[in-house]
Image (cartoon, rainbow, N blue to C red):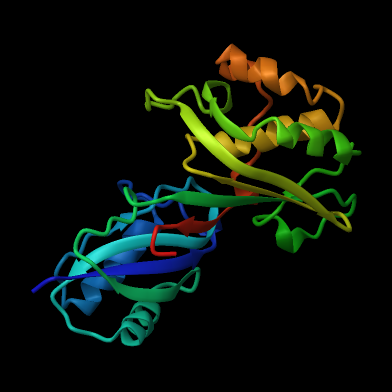
Length: 249
């Protein structure tokens, strides 16, 4: 009998070429499947995740599922996986789930966060975890612009031109920005996100904060359905997949 298991993990994306397996490249999926193969005495075990993360992007609450014939308590699964995984991946929780649970297709909403340092003297130890942006910023303009993203919109202007998905309509439930000292953090929650969508939104908001665009420009950028209308794509290393929510949450 096969048991389906849901696994929540965190990882430092700096050392990976993204989540998904790629030929001759180190990825999160490759390391997880290697660990599972060791636990299963060399048998290949494939995993399915809530979604991909790009090279350099981090995760605090990535979720995946896999199937196993082994009958192991949940806590023992967590211990076994962490014993076989590299130090830049950590399994937070393993749960038994029903056979029809799917880490990707059952997602109700996702939360991403993006971290920015406005400090002139940057902490070099944060270079792979925070985007250094040492420029004056009109925070009230950024906050105003955040409100214009809320709701259901066609986000063609805010995704990579390489995006192959035809339906680019997504629903943003909340978008907030908080300043603590010289550290700026964006929090965005929605029912789904397109390729590079969060990073382009953040890049555009930073341009608004600098006065290069106005908050109300968000309306015309959305209507344009043209990637060239939005701002630059913020770097990958400031982005975190923070939480994935399912009906059972």
